[in-house]
Length: 157
Image (cartoon, rainbow, N blue to C red):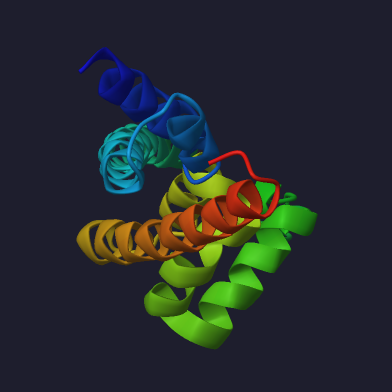
């Protein structure tokens, strides 16, 4: 039971890369996958809700702080999502939508990163959580199969 909890905590902290950890502490592959998925679900929920709350507060604060100008247009402020990671995330969302971002996001940005980027980009909360969970499940399964194949190839099983 303690090994399952450790694997779930690793899934919460690391996301998909926690699958080999679950195997390394001698959990059966289905149990390791289940523990990591439970941890990743907790990670997704906490990241999406916390970053959504922060985004709402930040947008309210920015709306109150921005002065109303009637004269010439003020210079355009730089958006923090205009960096390399934000532009890559925006391209994925524009090209594939929430479904594509949910499937590809955990592989490109990690579990925490994709949850916070999706929220920062303004994607709808529940479809984002559902598709990110589908993507995490897909990538955890791929990681499990690859880890088992490598452990078997090196004779460590």
